[in-house]
Image (cartoon, rainbow, N blue to C red; front, side):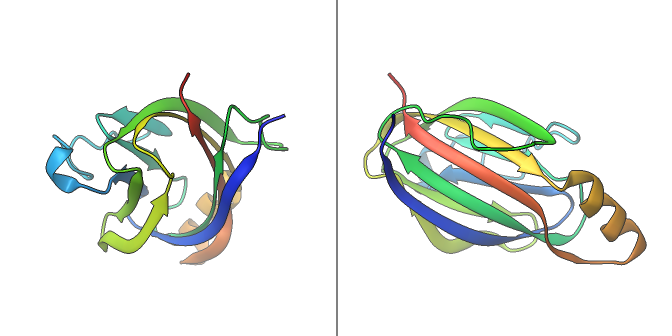
Length: 152
């Protein structure tokens, strides 16, 4: 069984259905967050970054980030969406980006640079779509679990 090294919960303000995770050193990211964002693609891999497409236009998503020593089991669901990508970091730190706020101050600390595997699981997509279309802004309806582990 894999060892859980770090875990944290974030509230991410989603706008225009997107947010992303990007290498903290912006100088080594050839195409920064927002550019080449693909509408409708749940999890999109880019060089030193990955983007997430939310089911709700404007809302606050609950995001649980977990850093593991090796590949973990899939988090208990059920999940509406799930995917995996590779991610390279030169610093071991990741910045969270949103469409309206840009780069957030908080950094996710992986602990070391290199190649990582990332698994993203999401729930609450139908409900956040409904709430944002009929009631306005939602809080914590759409939830993500994002697991990072060193790529072998």
